[in-house]
Length: 458
Image (cartoon, rainbow, N blue to C red; front, side, top):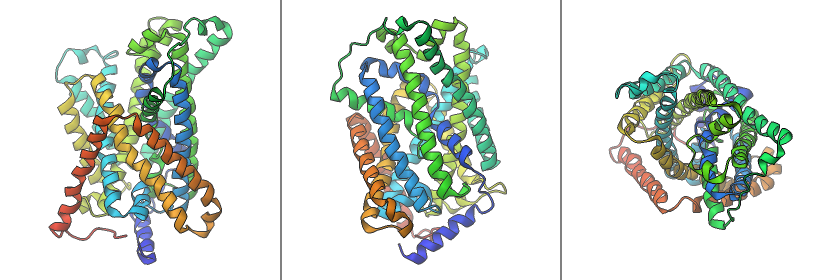
């Protein structure tokens, strides 16, 4: 990329959202925390139960690995504040073809996730609205309504999305801290409760790798603050702060919420539980606690749906700006929202939702925990390897003092991603390869047909 092209791209990127940089540190942090902490947190303790103490070691590995990833993304955001997030970071080091393939996998996995979040939220709404169980068409209609409700909120612009995200994140964090406080209260009032269910499962490298994959799935989204960079105030400061703070806060919450059920519920019972957090509340607060947990899961899901809808719109707009999707998807309304991009992703998620509604929630989560993690890993690999490559070539003088430290962190992040990849298994790996291969005709066909030039050329 030439210096002229780089300057031009930065100018265009700024111009597209000029006057709509409304996301500050707290809104960006809420975007990271709100997107990472969704519905999966309520199921994760049961998923980790069969691994015993390996779960705690695996969590430690994941926390350290995600901090390295957060440092890497924070550095890229500071070094290239006007870039289109992971797309441009990858493109700088590896070219446009690989950048598109990486973001294509990320794009598809995200709208699949959105559809599943909407389905799962409706499943928990049946606790409060029993009529949802009495009609075969009412649940999918309700899920579609929720999905499009957040598309409409996103059409109101980044300020509306950020405000909604702050509210839902605060509401979902309160009960998470409640679980942790409940565990601490039991520790001080009845310490023997933590000795009643001794975990005896032995640890092994294979178990650690599997746990790392499961816990990484729970942490997907730490990169979210880098994606809507054009809507962020003072991005070179805001994005790094939000990424690091959001990652550390989320990891602390997840570890606390995972450990409490593991120590209070027998291992076999926890592994078979459909609602491990609910079981903790029921054990201490009584049977009606199930309704409280259903409400908390609903709030968590709605917050994640809101934030991921914004990310979907921005990723779609970014790909269109680089000429791989139709040009009209780059256009924004008076609120600075990418209207066409949001509608397109809403339609894609709606199709996925309707076509999979007959499947059980459990089966969908099994699909997500492996294939979606595998589809997100290319983004993490590409961005961290980009730092290693660009660090060797030399970056801006203002960043050179930090280059050695950050390159070391990026290398550690690459090693962590490779370790997490081992636990994914062959089938999800093949799914990801197929997904990446499908991007090839999408990338090359417009060039073969001599489509109009991209909106920006870097």
